[in-house]
Image (cartoon, rainbow, N blue to C red; front, side):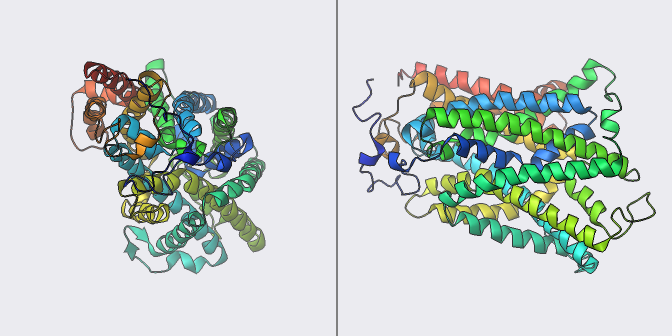
Length: 511
């Protein structure tokens, strides 16, 4: 089938306002409004990568037994791998000015695209909740440092499993995040521009302070790896590598939501290549040093608890002596309050920067895609926030194993197949040519539902379901399924991509 004359039509000239699949939020971005430069994209990734969940990645790997270079190798390799699908899916966003849910219509159909869009949105809602919870905890740490009585507010009462102080701070931070995104995408660009360098400065300050106070870099840099064989290391390395990829598997799908604003392919590609791997490795290295130094400083605290920076900050700023110590770490009330305030500013900026960019923009577009005429971007953002509460994200941070092996690897089993289908469709089947107008028509060339994509998605997800159920301790399965599960993103991506192309070819599709 030949491409129609408007396959690469100028988005400024498309008149699709009467289509039920069109809305101002989902419409192609006009060329005149594509203003993001290389720095804007690099700053976007710097802002998203400088966050507490990134810290938890590095701290979690150390908590599972890796030494410093093993942890950084795993993180660096994972981010270089995930950069490939990110750049591949970024291309159509810049070329056509379309967001992720509209791009998904090419492979899944104009109605079927709601399946990958909602799958991505639900994961983003979980991340939104996690980031909001962590930002709220930074606020709680500060308030406890100012007034220790705040820590016991409400007594034993809980709200959705949260103590009252944490629930209050979570609610306040929730309102801040939603309020900022309602201002618009241009505000996000300006926020990222100043937040990115500030976050790096704050992380460096915390690192230097902890190392100087502890007197050394800590046991992670002195001790050998806790793995006594390559086999023992491999059992932790593979699921951890998949977890690193899973960390940004969300953005590997919805990166067009941002690259649609890019001036050109060179700007978005260079900005992302410079911003993502380098920032993740640099910030993770800081997290490894901070985690290790805190083990030297807080010798009475079990190392497994020190992978979470909010717990470390709680000990550092507490007016009481931490376990195993005779006096508070910071004796001066003024110094303790200043430390808590700086921590609050740093964590709040990091959390808001990442949360808005990575966890609100995409699901807001995804929910809007369900009914473009009735659900606007702003309404989608509010829906995201509400689901982020219902998920109760604090349960996902119960331990390093839960965070990496269950949460990150678990959803990568779902998002990997979606990425495989979309990339195979755009780069191999359609050879980077899309009919933009038909992406907004119910009965255009892309159809309402692509059963090839639906079947390929099921085929890619199915092999990892038994392993996931075993990981979350729902049921016992044969060892072979648990052995396969750590490779969830890789196997899902490959199986679904191949299955989709085979099914489309059998159906006689050429474009």
